[in-house]
Image (tube, rainbow, N blue to C red; front, side, top):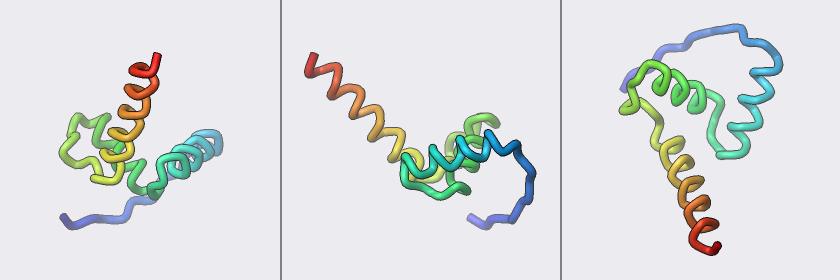
Length: 69
């Protein structure tokens, strides 16, 4: 898949949330933004594999907590 570069300005508080999330799931800022746009535009096939994997891992952890209860 080819890609293009897009420059945007975002509020600093949103940037901080972006950084926290990217560090938490260990993916790049670009991958988080691509995932967010894909969700917003209802194009989930365009979500990066690493982001989908991070989402699945989080869901598995939630299920493990529920099973242990």
